[in-house]
Image 1 (cartoon, rainbow, N blue to C red):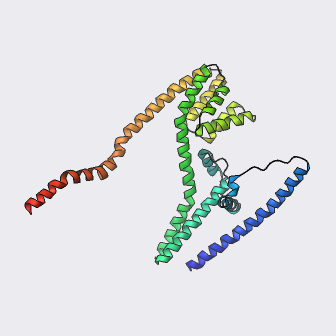
Image 2: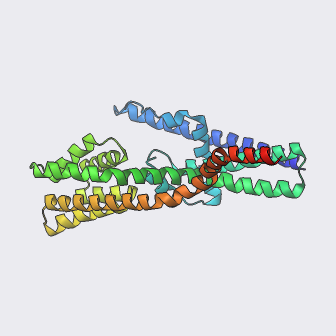
Image 3: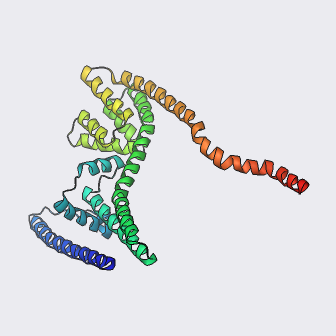
Length: 300
């Protein structure tokens, strides 16, 4: 019965793939015809290389995600926010939904195959299938959350360096936007990427305030929120940006020192587990082992 279910799932997946490929072929034909009409008017453009489109698995995941959203109506807002926090701007939320479905089916099929091969009871097979399905469904979003958390933590660490650069350049006589351009050219981490993206949005027509708010929406951290709101309030109230940056640099140094002291206070608690279960047994074996062996030899 279980083998019949696996075969049915495989046939259903093959049918979905064929339908999606047929839909894509028809849409590609229409797109090619439209581009040909545009070229007839002299507005042809060079094709843009897209490495994501070359990946067959990513393409299939995107198609599967789009098809599932039509029937299931899965939300995109939370996934889009996680993608922005992780810096994956060129990935569609439907692709992540497709990866979730693929990992769900893959984990379930692997568990079914392994459990049937070992002759496990039916109840354990069903429970394991449900558990592996939940794990497969949550795995892509867990990866996104972890990557976004690491990226925001790195932005939090790099922000004091940005503020120091802004203080130096503002005191040298540059404007705030020129200081941001110089800092964006020097920074190479995720904070530099966010700055360059915000400056690009500003060149496309957004105001500096809207560009900074967009950067805050993409990577919202406590220090970055303080930085953006201080700059916006300073421009609104007419306060000197140099004095604001100087005060922010002082506050960032205090915050960094407080976080370092907090990590130092947590270190003894984190060292208890390896100290008790890893270091103490080896030390007792080295110190007390010869004495125990000598006592056993003496007392027979």
